[in-house]
Length: 203
Image (cartoon, rainbow, N blue to C red; front, top):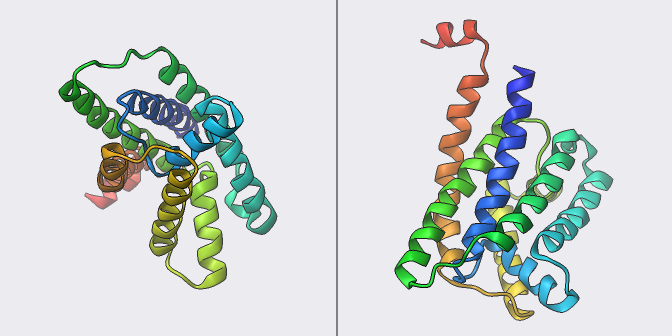
C-alpha cells in the first residue's frame, strides 16, 4: 500500500500542476492562488511555476515553524513536482483561439486539477503548504478550517488582483468545482488504499 500511496502522490502532483498550467492557457484568470502567482510573475520576472514554488516555500517555512507535524516528505515532493509541471504545461500547451474552445479546455483542466489534488490528499504523506497553513492557523485561532480556507482564498485573489493578477471565469469555476471533485476523488482513492480485510468488513 505504501507504493500505491507514493504513486498517488507523484501522479496527483503532476496532474494537478499540469492541469492548472493548461487552465491558465485559456486566459480566463486562474485559481485563487494563481492570481497571486501571476502578480509575482509580473513584478519579479520569474516563471509561473517558480512563483508558485516561492509562495509555497514561504507557507512551508511558516508551517514548519509553528506546526511541524503537518510537514512530511510528501509535502516537499508535491511542491517540486507541482511547480515543475505547472511550468512545463503552461509553456508548451497551445492556447485555443476560439472562446468556446478555451472555456471547454479550462473546465476540463479544472476537473483534472481537482482530481490530481484528490489523489495527492488520499496519499496522506503530508499536507500541502497551503492546507498546512490553514490547519495551523485554524487550530491557533479557534476558527474552522473551512472558514480559514475561504478567508485565505479571498485574500490571495484580492492581493493578486491588486498587484496585476488576472481574475476571471476560471477563478469562479475553480472555487465552485475544486472542492466537490477533490472530495469525491479522495474518497475513491482512500477506498483503494484500504487493506483487503477492511473492504470486506465495510461491505
